[in-house]
Amino acid sequence: MKPIRSLEDALNRCQGMGMRLSRQRRFILELLWQAQEHLSAREIYDRLNQQGKAIGHTSVYQNLEALSREGIIECIERSEGRLYGNISDSHSHVNCLDTAQILDVHVELPADLVAQIEQQTGVRIVDYRIDFFGYRSPDSAHPSPSDTPKASETANTSENLWL
Image (cartoon, rainbow, N blue to C red; front, top):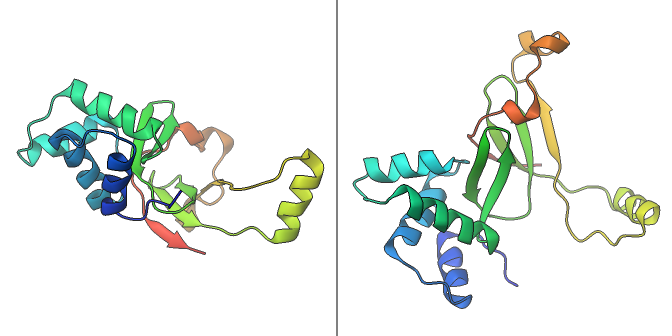
């Protein structure tokens, strides 16, 4: 299956899967590709309504569920709720504990490391995702354990980086 790399790819995937492209579904997809960050359902609802695109809570939740279930958008589970974003290529996340950003990064593991994992597990690796956690500011690079937020406490903005 061709990877989703653009809004047009996402719309084509919906049509190819027989999903109806309602105006609400199109609004959500357009917003996620324009925003380039991970958003909660509430943030999606708020932004669309601020743009004058009247859409109900239920419609937002139902469309996000359908789109994420079919792999058209990304859904990240957090303790405070789910965050949704567009899917570009397979990528990992860096969770900045200073800014609460989620940065998308593209990491290619060395082939010998992947082979070692396959040998240890007996599973042929076809894809992977790594979650990194760290600090951007030097002052907070060595916090006390009680000051360190849990990974689930990180918020919902993203940037794309290539490594």
